[in-house]
Image 1 (cartoon, rainbow, N blue to C red):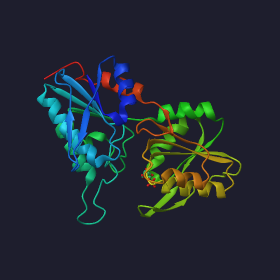
Image 2 (cartoon, protein in one colour):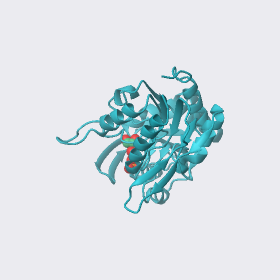
Image 3 (cartoon, protein in one colour):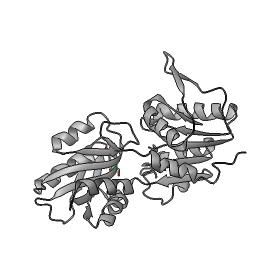
Image 4 (cartoon, rainbow, N blue to C red):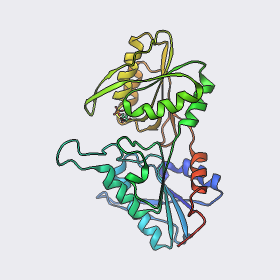
Length: 296
Ligand code: R5P
């Protein structure tokens, strides 16, 4: 059985449909003081998949704790988390003495609750493998870049693909290479949550169609600065394609003001820019889990 939450219901139902398993939505009651109560189906099978995208994560991590512990109480022996957006992966070291290394802490929290964790394009920068962050039995890191490459092939003949910072090299190169398109990576210096400086790579952008490819749009500052810089170099137009459309606060407005043409994303986080559904990717990953059909 797959259990979902109402803010990710359509995608959860699509995944359950692809796997040909039942889907139930976990009921949430929010008390006046902010605490919550969850209600799961009283009878659970031995393998339960919880599909929960962990954007806006602070409340969701408590809900996930309640859901996973309750599912175990109700008989689930194997628990799989499908978290299309995996939170807290960017803080992967203490940049200043005393800072929490959220990636490790949240990774261990998830590994304690779940046997399997599946996600797409997690922000792994200083480590290579998801299991280094999430020591679960199976930690599966998928990528949306093949879907992105196919999508862009339908829309462009010869675009220039740019990643806005060095971390994005892994995604922009994976999208550009199969299509043999020109790509480059910008240099980014972040001096605050909402302050970034970007230097474009040495590629002639004059009259070219540019697609900025990144894993996450959060405050929107990285991409909006990159868009402005490309247009200053006389790019024909600039589109944006990201895996995780977090779009905090006015992020979309920043991109529009900067002059973006199209904003596209996968459906890892529900947003109006979603054009790439991920359920087929997750279906294959679930079916490939060595413990998918085993229990205990
Ligand atoms: C960081 O390196 C990520 O890949 C994104 O570039 C970043 O999270 C985007 O953040 P924002 O939209 O707040 O600039």
